[in-house]
Length: 431
Ligand code: C2O
Ligand code: CU
Image 1 (cartoon, rainbow, N blue to C red):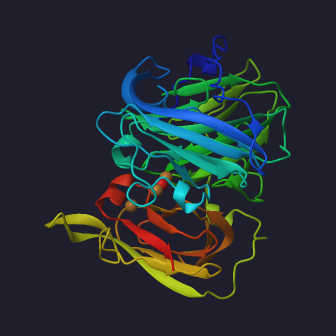
Image 2 (tube, helix red, strand yellow):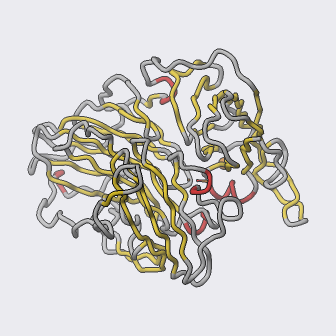
Image 3 (spheres, rainbow, N blue to C red):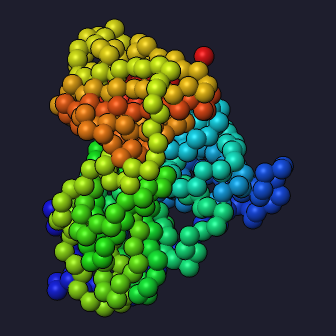
């Protein structure tokens, strides 16, 4: 697929500014012994959204927008989010993907709360201790409702921002009505090319999130760049020139560079974000070599030498009983949820999971409430890197380590949400 650029690679840079950001419902206040309290309200409702091309899509939204209002807080603040619903046909929750909330705030209906129905509300409250790029989404029938738009970006800025004067923005890759889009805060999702004008020398951090069901391959052309964070957590890796990386469903990469005096293009599977100093031809989409994110970091993260427990998850596509009927299903260890035996852990333990993919499709595995340290991929030692969404390719074996430091009963599932709905879901339970 190719980008839809104007002939000659030029772009009209007028009319690029979107509507102003939604402000939090109230300003910072003093919270109990935990820094400022930041309050937000999100209301789930159906709405028609308009993509940048003018195409309209019937969506499920927060506050009439999809992606929903970006929530951005500073490390040390307390976040309070009041979820309301105007959805007639389904419940809604908020799951904080990649953020290690206390178990009761995790937004899993039937496990940590009841789904919020029309006219009801639920208040999430947690402290933002973990800087980085995250996202929020409903966890009630997510294969339909998240796909239809019930998600948004969640960013925790460090106490001391690295480049306060920079262009530092979450960017969502999401498919609406069959069209992949690039969504920046304050603008309609671009089913083609989104554009921003930036002065040369501006420090840039693009917090790209893959909110789709399958992987996207992305890269930056026109300037050397680094992947400075994976799934919200920093990595120290070399600069890439035209290199590309595959981003798992649910995953995030922070792409960092300094704006040069010529246009730069972040491209992903035929759509893109063009940053321009105001003139100049857009570079061609990155077509460089694909890097392996598990070997990208500098390797200065220390992996545990021994494990308190080990589990194996064999991912497969087998006939299993669902609703009493034998059907081809996505399985873990031959079973479908809720019959997959839980992985039991104790607080303080290091637990090793060997994840074996025996099916013909990738499975972007996502443990709630924790990142896992990737140790090996297909026998090759990883750099190692912390991830919360890791894409186990067909036939691959990944070894990952979980540090049990967030007690509760958590889901772990494939973020290809049709697979999760068919049964590729289990619990990680503290005993
Ligand atoms: Cu984004 Cu249960 O996950
Ligand atoms: Cu899967």
